[in-house]
Image 1 (tube, rainbow, N blue to C red):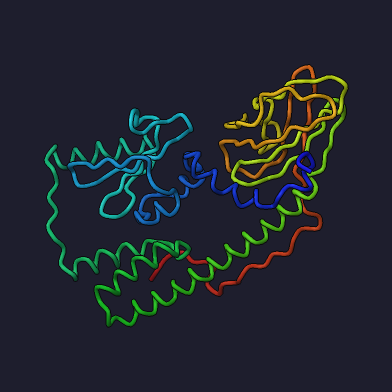
Image 2: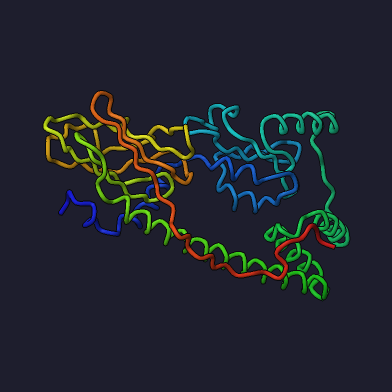
Length: 317
């Protein structure tokens, strides 16, 4: 039973999520690209997670640093990390080039003297937040909700703030439900894909079956269907996220063994990516080359997501 993927316990799906936290992978660059000047500090942590390092400046701002790759070390070399400058609770600059330019301009204005900021009065805070929220697109629900909640805290009897908070709380709940529905749909798709991928395919001397666990993790079965033993190394496995490009393996402890004829070897492999897989590849020079294409559902699964009457918008008025 151990050597047959169809009998593997479904609990491996749930244990897959635990491994991601131990790998300490850097954030997806696509998430970092979502962050722009003006984004709230709380939203940065929601999007990119906890920063690898936080550096405070004597000029009153601080910088989040996120690793740009697996080998990056923000404690030893900040040049290998992506900086996100935070000033007064909002993003001021993102990326090495823009962060350095912003710091030069900022330090030039203060002429090397630490900036002292006088405490704001309540009317001044309200005026500043009103100006900020007007420039934020309606689509940035979390930012709008956080600011209007703070404005309502400053002015509890303001009916406009009450309505805005209620509107964005409803919108946030709908977006959360939409994400939940999408996650459910993706889970159904993954189940459909794995039902096909967990069957051995290939030509002698090797056949392969795989199971997608998500977040760059896979469970692999390799069968020796030939007449001679061959060695299976973790470096023989590759992942393709788009046509023509292969991603090398990041980690695996289950291979590096000889596989006798008629036997099956299995184990987990992890890639340093969270992309949606297109194909899983096994290349053993002089022995075998296998490619398992990840199938797409046909017909496609129905889309079930809540509709919002205010799904789009440019800014707050």
